[in-house]
Structures are given as C-alpha cells and as structure tokens.
Image: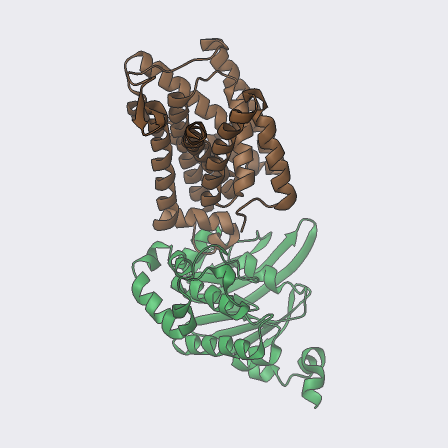
Length: 287
Length: 238
C-alpha cells in the first residue's frame, strides 16, 4: 500500500512537468496552429544550460533568471524569424511547420551531442539524493522543487490568460482569430507574445526536468511522445485539461511500473490512449 | 463619414466586387440590400480589412484606410459586427465586452460604456458570467453588437444581424439599431429583411453581382417597381 502511494505521489510530481511542457505546446498549437516539434528539444536545451551553470555552482532555481528571459526572446525570435516567414509563403502551415520544427529538433539534438556527447547527464546539487519524509512517503527534494516550479509556472500562465488584458487577447485569438482582429487585437503581436511565453515555459520545464531526471540529447523524443499524449488526452484549447492529463499520465506511468517492467510502461500508456480515443475521440476536456 | 470609390475584390481568380461606390454621411442609417452572392458580405469584409481589395479607395473619417489591417480599422472607429458573429465560445459575456474595448481609445471608458450597453441589452447584465457558447442565438447576436459598441465606434457596420432569429428577437435587434442611430451613431446595415432595412434607411444601395444597380432614400426604394418585383414579390401585391 505504501508502495502504491509512493508511486502515485511521485507520479503526480513528475506529471506536473509533463503538464507544463504540454501547456506551452498546446498554447502554440491553439493560437498559431503550429505543431511545435522542437518544443521538448528546447526544454532539453534548457536542461543543458542548467547543467552548465550548475557546474559553475549556480543553483538550478537561480538559473531561471537567465533561462526565462533568454527563452522568451528565443520564442519571439523563433516566431518572427522562422515561423512567420514560412507562414507568409503560403501552403499548409500545420504541415510546413511540422517538418520545419522537426528539422530544428534534429539539428538541436545533434549540436548538443556534438558538444557534450550522446550520453546521459545528471545535474548534481547540494540537495540531490535527499528526501523529505512524510509518514510512509519519501519525497525527493529535487522532485518537490521541480514540481513546485512547474505548478507555480502553470498557475502564473493561468492567471495571465484569465485575469489580464493581453492574456484575454491570447485566448480570444485562440478561439476565433477573425473575431479577435475585429476587436482591434493585433494578431501578430499576440502570436509573438504567445511564442515568447510558450518557449519560456519550455525553458522552465527544462529546469524542472534537469532537477528530476537524467537527460541526453535524444531525450526530447521520449518527451515529445509524452507531450502529444498529454495534449491529446487533455484536448487542445484547454489549459486545465492539459494539466489534469499531465498528472494522469505521470501517475499512470509510475503506477504501471509496479506491476509491469519499466520498459513496458509506454506500451501500457498508449494502450490506455487507444481505449480513451475509442471512447472519447476529442479528448477528455475538449469543449 | 465613409466614402467608398470603385472598390474591387476577388477570391483567387473570381472577382466578386466590380467597382462598388457608396457614401455614408455622419449620423445616417444606410442599408445595403441585394440577393445572395451579390457581394454584400465581401463588401463589409473588405471595408473592415478582413479581405484584401484589388483596386479602389476607402476613405473613413476624412482619411484613407484602404489596405489597413483590421485592428487599425477598428481602432479608427469603423467597427464590424460580422456574419456568424465570430464570438469566443469559451469566454464569458463580460470578457467579450472587455475585449470589445481593447483599443486604447475605448479602454479608458470601459466601465461607463459597459453600463450603457447593459441599459441597451438588459439580458446581457443577467448573463454577464455566462460563456458565449451557451447563449441563445438572439443573445449571441446582442453580444456581438455589444462587443462592437464597446469599441466606441464612429460607424457600426452590421452583416445580417437578424439572420436565423425568431421574429420577436429580430424586431428587438432592429429597435436597438434604430435607438443607437437616434443617439447619433452612424450605421451601415446589410440585411435580407428588405422591408425593415429600407424603412429605417436614410439611404439605401441595391447590390447585384458585385455592382450597385440602384440607390436612393430607403422608403422611396420601397415603392420602386424594380425592387417590388425582385425582392418584395407577393408581399407587395397582397
């Protein structure tokens, strides 16, 4: 029983990182109709930045001060310099962007591999390996820090989208771009802002995953699979849906490893996804 | 207020507006009528910047706005209530009104403008926390008009605001438009409710296959033999 509880809670903690990664991914998908394959690769890039800084004695949480503004600007530049020019050429943006961002992800993976080698890396900090004892539960401090980071970021995104004028403009463009344009909303500005925030959130997710997991240049592929899973289950267009789906996927992955070998966990997940899509083809939360 | 000169527009190779010209004076109620496919919706979409123009000029409030993007045109005060309303289904009534006042000119008057709109459409005050997707058709149309009014328009352009509504709801919408015009708002209305649209209009234009074929004071057009034959048919003979 203690074992099940432990698996469930750790699963929920790691699930919050899936949720954060899924939230940014679904924001870009919803607002800009771009399937941003490079999203998890950027998070892995952020994890390497954390690794670099940690080697110089900078705590992962302190590295946010560099990662967040840097990734925000990266997101804006990515939209203005890559996606927008591609969109202006015409053609099917979903398809074009998918190929384009897949290429960028492969390029980023190879750059990381060329510099640091293809092997896995671990960020070591003073509190690595220490845990907080809570009754029968042992909660690693790194997990708590990563999950806390993800939770705070998701909450901030939610408040931004629901309580501020620019955030409401983002949701308006998401739900009806022409209707938004007729409200004097500048679609380019809003899209640019969306990319900035989404990529910044991928940066935060990278910091969180550096705290919790080991990572290698190729890790982004597995993360991409999880992100797709989370967004499909949660439904594009629902931040709350994505968050619940992230927790669910995290918990299910961990619980399944209690009864089946770890290597089979993805199989179990995708079998569940198959059943879910048969029962609710639009995801759990699609409006 | 609005001067349109020789406006052309196309969808790909297919030209749908062939040199449309019309004028709306400040304070006027102007109607555009015409059969399906005449280019009425395209005309409004071109004017509000949603669709590109191939040739021609649009002058609004003394300045050319031809080729401007929709957000700038709205900010200038030409505000479009589109066909199909284009609301945000997952956002509340209040959020729609806030977004209507997104432009800088309107945002400073958000509170008082909202009160004004709740007085015009009291049902929206009751529904203020409800999501737009859960409103009835008539309420959604009111919300679309309310959202546009929040932008502090100099000219309100409406595309088929009574389409698909129950007659009583349609009458309520028309009454609201008449009241707004009496308060001094310039209105450009596209409607298939020919009798209503002409009765209210200081000036009306008849659009057919992308050209203006007839114009004049609305009530006068109501007695025009050509209009009676094409649009009013049985209603006029009975």
